[in-house]
Length: 340
Length: 279
Image (cartoon, rainbow over all chains, first blue to last red; front, side):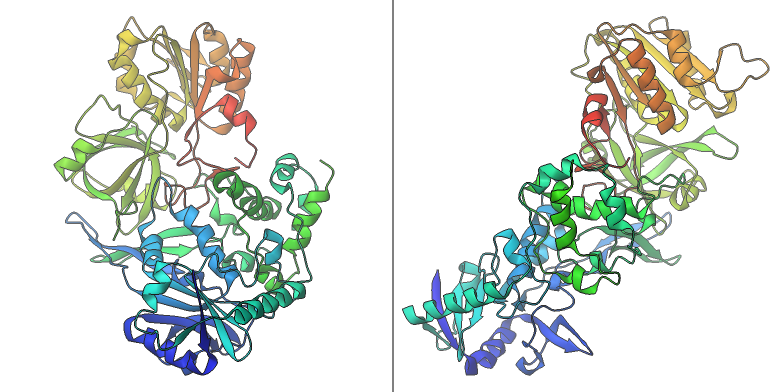
C-alpha cells in the first residue's frame, strides 16, 4: 500500500485530472444542505463539513431508477437499460464508505443486483478522513475509525498544509495513473502526523453504543414491552430510513401510458404501514412498535445473522434528524440492559 | 451489464379458467413463454413461485399451481384482490404477461418418497398444494397413502372442481371435501377444515402433513395435527407475504432474518416455532 503526499494547493489539479477521464461526484452545498452531486470544476466542492446531511448512497443505489422500459399490450416488448458508467466519488467519509461495503452483502448473494453492482464495479471511492466528528457520531462503537482506509480505494487525510494519501488497491493506483507529478512519497513524519490527527478525531467522539452481545440479546427480548416504550414517540415519518446509509429496502412500481412504460424502483421505508400491508387487508406489522422494532432488528440482529456484520456505521444521521429525538445509540445500549 | 434477475420473460396467456366466481373470484391462468428456450429451461419443483406481471400494472408473487410433470406451460391461480390481480382477472387468452422465477424453496418430494402424505388446504391456499398433489399423483408409485383434505366457505368457493372429480374417481387417493356452512344437496362434510381433519384422522405413522390456507386455519390445523400425534418435523406449510422483488432484497417479506420469498415459502412447523418475527 503506497503512502503519498498531496499538497493542498495541488488538490484542484488532482480533481481537474480526475475530471478528464471520469464523472466526479463530490460534496457540494445546496441551499442549507451538504450533499453529493456531480461537479464539473473543483471550485464547486465544499469540503468544510463533518457528514453530508444526505449520504452518497444514492449514487450507487438510486432513489428512483428505471429497471427496464417496456411496451405494454399484446405486442409487448422489453427493453434493457444500461447502467455502466465510470464514476469517482470524491470526499466520501470512511463511515459512508463502510456503508457501501455493508450494502454489498444485500445486493450480492444468490441473485446479484446488476444495477447496484455494475455501478459499484465502475465507481472508485476517494475518501476523506473525518477530522471533526460531531456530537452524534459513533463510528468507533463498531471498531472503526473516522480515518479508516479499509473501505475506500484512496484515502486522503488532512494533516495541515497537505493531505496524507493512502493508495489502497489497484483501483486507486489506476485512478491516479499519469499523475505522479502531483503525489510525492510520504515521510515517516507524515505517517506520524496522520496518526496524531486520527487520534485527535477519535478522542472527539464522545458517544458510544454498547453492541457487545447485542445479537444474542435481541433474540431474547423480541416480545419485551421495552419496544412499546421505544416506539411510543415515533411519528412514522421514515426520515431515519431515508437518510440511513445502509437502508436498502425498495418498492417496484410500473409507470406507463397505453403505449410505453417503465418498471421503476424507488426507495421504500419499513416505517410505512403500507410497506407490509397485504391485498387481503392483513398486515403483519400493523403497529409502529412492530415497525420501529423491525428497523432496529434488521440492523442489529437480522443483518448480523445473515452477513456477519451490524448494519450500522455510526454516522448518527438518524439521531441528528429524527423529529422526535429517537436515539439509536440510546435504544440499542438500553436494549442490551433490558432484563430478558 | 450483469445478468438481470428483475427483468421478466414474456409469456402468453394460453387459457383462463374460472375456478370460483362471486365476490372473491379465483381464476387459473395458463402461461406459455414466448421464447422456446426459456420455456424448456424453466424447471421448478412443487412449492416454488413466480413473479407474474402485467406490464404497466405491476408484479405479484404467486405459487405455481401446475405440476412440473406437466411440461410446456405453467399455471398460476389468482384471487382477485388488489390492483395487479384485478387487472389479471380482466386479461384474456392471447394477452401477454411478464414472468420471472422460479423462486423460493420447494416441498421435499424426494425426501418424502415412501411416506404417507396428508394435504390440508383451504380456499386459495390450495394453489401450491395442487402443484404438489398433481406431482405426487403423476409419480404415484413412489408414495404411500394419500389423503387430500380441502375445504372452502361454500361449494361455489371450491377450486379445481374438475380435477377433484377426477381425483375422487381414483382408488389410490382419498379425497375429503368440506364446506363451512350447510347447503342443499351437499352430502360431504360440513364444518371447518381443521374439524374435517379430526374426522378423517390420518395416522401419523410414517406420514407427512402439508397445509396451506388462511392463517387462522393453519393455526388450528397444526393444533389438531399435534392432537393426532404428528410431531413438529412432520408438519409443513407454505407462507406468503407482500413482496416486490422475489429475490430477498426489497426487505418486506421477512420473518425474523428469513425472507419468505428466498428462504421460504415452504417451512416446517419445527422451523417456524424456532424463528420469531411478525407473520
